[in-house]
Each structure stands twice: as structure tokens, then as C-alpha cells.
Image (cartoon, rainbow, N blue to C red):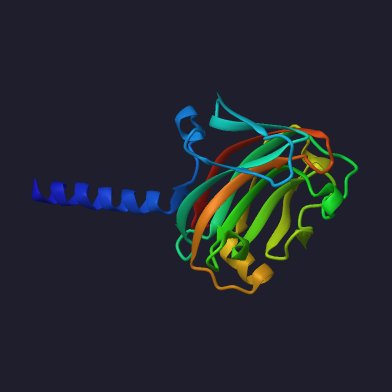
Length: 216
């Protein structure tokens, strides 16, 4: 019995360690939706409409941006030494073709996920990497936001190849902070989701699902 008990305890410890290697960020439930921080973009006339749904893979967030711009943020501590990889499953049903996304006039994305590191006393001093589902650029394209060099846009998916298709992507956030900001970041401070079309005045429809951090 003692051997069996020890085996059960060891199994539970290993199981808990395995779960610790995957940190889920969003539940995408009705309850969670009302707890997230709504972040409206300054100057935008309307907020993006966010709603939750579900399919065979679980809950998802639907975003409809019609000449609108607002994001949903969440304060969360992520240990990038243990779980540096962000995993995102997403889909763009209606994209934004023909715009130059890295200009102020057309700095819109049908889907984007921000990872944020506090580096000062005010939000304006924070550093961010903006993982985007682009409508016009290839995977791997990156550029500073035309509004601030402290936020880098990095294309992880493109509708040129995957329009109206679920796509799962991943990126090493710790390495990306070093590559784009020359920062050795051990811990993230928050994440945000945003679909925006306030600059282009167009309409985009996108979906987010299963966003989590993992060891590899």
C-alpha cells in the first residue's frame, strides 16, 4: 500500500508539472468577456464588437471590426524562462486587402495579439510585440508601429494563404523581445487582443481560439 501511495503521489506531481508547462491565457467564456479590460483606440469612432461562441475545438472569440478599433486586455504574469512560446489558433473570415498596414493611414489588422512588458511608470513606456494575421504581407514580415517604435508588428499568418481557415501559429516571445527590443525579458505583464479598421474604414471579421504559452 505504501508503494502504491507513493506511486500515486509521484504521478500527481508529474501531472501537475506537465500542466505547468502550458499556461492558458483566455477562457473565451461569457463570464470572462465582461472581466476583460476594454481598450478603445484614441480617435476611433466605434468599438470593435466582440462575442463568444464554440465549436468542436472549444470556445472562441469572434471580432467584428466595422470602421472601429478597440481591444480586450488581460493582466497576466507569464514566466518566459519556463514557457516562452506563445500558441495562437485564429481565423480571418473577412480581411483587409489592398492596404499598407505599416503606415499610419492604414495601420489596421483583422486580427492581432499583443504581448506586453512594463518598462516604466506609464503605459506609454511599455514595450510590446504585436503578433498579427496580415491581409497583405508575408509571414515573417515585421516593422515598428508607425505610431511608436516601442511596439513591433510581426506577421505570423496571412490571408494570402489562409483566408477563412483556422490556423495555429507559435512564436518564441522571449527571443522576440531580444530580437526586436534588445531586452532580456523574464516575465510578461499582460496580453491584449485587437481587431481594428478605424484607419482604413473597412470591415473585418476574425476569430481567436486557444491562446496559451508552452515550453516548446
